[in-house]
Image 1: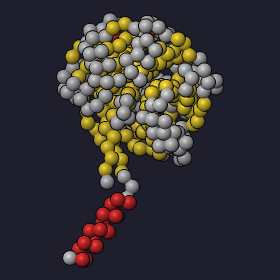
Image 2 (image 1 turned 30 degrees about the vertical axis):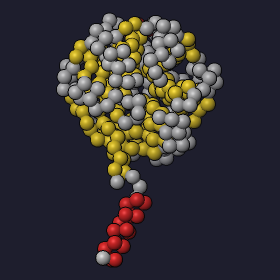
Image 3 (image 1 turned 180 degrees about the vertical axis):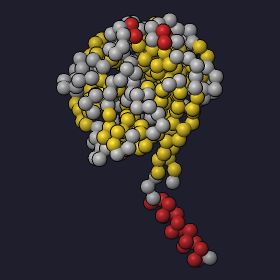
Image 4 (image 1 turned 90 degrees about the vertical axis):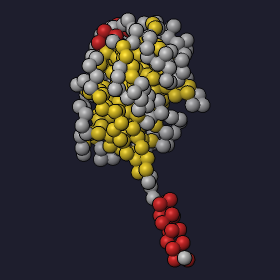
Length: 292
């Protein structure tokens, strides 16, 4: 009995001291018929697509069925799902739209942004129903009144183009912009001043690109924990998730998938748990799972 108990105790401490392994598991793989430019899932069940001439659809069953929404706008390129009911889109014509019913109906916000690709807005992030930012590769703006008005924000000095955008409302309102130069720019004063640090991992070549649709994504859960989604070209060719637990001082690389096109449209859920990739009429969602 003593021998068995000691063995069990040793096994317990071995398991407790082993590092937690994380993997990305496919939870959705569907081929919708609508013309899509951006697709995003907030969880494994609820998703929204936006596309040609404002065509917007939502699903509550993991993409098995889709319902066409009531929306009138030009093409949709950017998406942010804040909750089961609240979401925002941006796109061509400077058309910005919001929903308060999970994506069934969309209403107008004030226009902001260039008219057509490749200059159109395709990055959008809100912390709640009223406070958010929207961006194209070369222009950004902020709102505190649910898009009734927009105030333009100057791009950080030295940054060429926006590749992803995230707004964090942890202890203070923080704007985080991933640049095509591979740096994350941070502002806590509505864009008046910025600090920056690179997203880099030794022996990994990662691409950061504003794309024609979002081909990178950025989410921070708090001041220290964050995720960036990008395409790795070396030592492998695959979509990866770059993770930081120290505010961006260092990053580790997690493989997501090698099966999707490098120019897929990318969406990352607000909690950083679900990444959606869209390319060639295929929507695939991966969930980040931790195991022993």
